[in-house]
Image 1 (tube, one colour):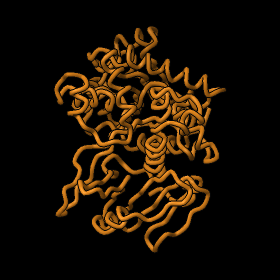
Image 2 (tube, one colour):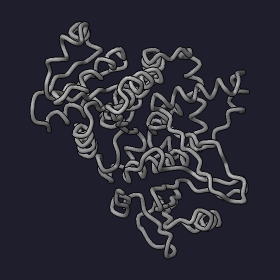
Image 3 (cartoon, rainbow, N blue to C red):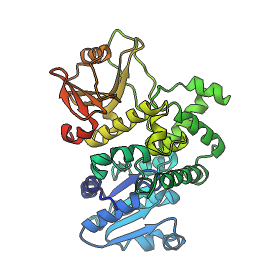
Image 4 (cartoon, one colour):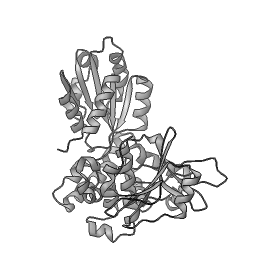
Length: 385
């Protein structure tokens, strides 16, 4: 079991401030394990309900009788299976003094989020759990994490082949079982084809018209398909940044897989040798590095973007918090150089710093405000905000 101390700490803080904390993420990302780790750190009793267990479902047939007497921490795992519990949780959360705090674990769906937001407004804080990151697996294992992705079972598999088999089984179960349980009615075969097609567009700007022509449906329909996979945490679109400039700027998001392991399985890439010879290697590495930067800095969804103009200037990642603006370029090379696009981004976006994350072994200053950072030194070079 790989300790996830940072996430434990964040959940501990949230549980002190909110009576209910929702941990969201795809199945098998480690929500249950993290909940157990959080429970071990807390004083007092913990009661755990697995809503995929028929015995626990039976215990909750009368939620008032079962939940009202409980004290300490109450964990409700796979909460999306019983969204009707949310109104009752509101009643328990409003008791004074607070007798119990609730940690609800689940895979998000539009309907579940809608119901919980309406029922628990002001009483719940959501925490999205990502896959394993470089600080958790150690920087020396960066290639393994990149190839296999951050699902714990995939990362810790004994061989690359077993890891890939696990991911293929996950993809099949996700499409055929998980999405229907989340209330998604789109046929699994359609979403499978769409998801596979997205793998070839990883790292590219979203073009709904191109996808709609391929599928013979409307732009609205393919945008719905994208929303489905985004709400299930397997796709992470990177939103565009708009500046008040006399330049035409890109307004569509960039499409990235949330987990490079899933991307590689859909592209039929099992080993690093397969990956190194594939035309999507650059895009895959770019998405992996961007994800690691976002997680390491601890920036929120409304604090990171990409930026591009129709004239060709582009910035892979823009991190904005208050008046602080940092830019990041990702280059799979050992000898990065300053490009005209970087100079344009520095000037137009008024960046305080620009970092070029590369695949070499050493970090060095390129100018006063531009620094090249080797991925192997990322954790030392960048400190969480």
